[in-house]
Image (tube, rainbow, N blue to C red; front, top):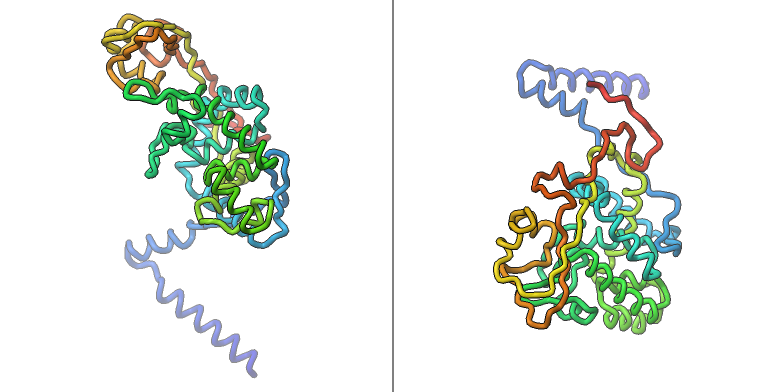
Length: 328
């Protein structure tokens, strides 16, 4: 009797629900379309993960849940992740050889994505550039920073400075994951935390939220970057920003008027600053005769079609084996 009553009640409830959402107005129709078409699914956490060859202990629930949080963020922050793919195609070919030359694991290219998403940004704490150096730290590792030049905005030089920091940190910690975490917390701060808590692994540390999330953000960025289709990102090869083909113009004297200098090399000030964001002013005093290298387009034209490496429209998903047929 209970089963029959329960079944009958269930039917009545269903009938009443359909009666309530009977599509009789545009608003109700819109709601039904929303209910039918909106589906939010939880991304799957990979069975294993590593950073710089060091395994992530995903068997620890708090490690797995922290990784889960950042996978979720990278998956559903669509605009940020799409721009990551676009910019990485331009800048990874610059960053990767510098890391390799300095003996820094390739995975550290994901650290710069976590820091700035490959944009010359300024943090609330005053860190600037692609690798987010504070002024004093940048100068410590060889970057020129003044009213006229800020090499934190110079991709090659800032990457070299980051490598110097990372090599020094790894000599202290002898662990690349801890080294990466120190890039956020600082060598002294992370070293003291390890000592006070009597552990030697990043994953065993209890830290402030920003540093606690830092490594997991890098891991999530790496995972999504390497497996975009797994997380719902379907980009064509033509969607990516191509490397800019440039040539060097060497200057060892003062430049009184940089916009006028730009005209001499068939550019305007805007494009010269785009290619050389380390320039910080309209002039460049240079009493010491230091050599500065300006990047200019390899073709004598300001139209981007002339100095962007040509990309043929592709029909393959980035980093994926799936293919699609484009419909014209």
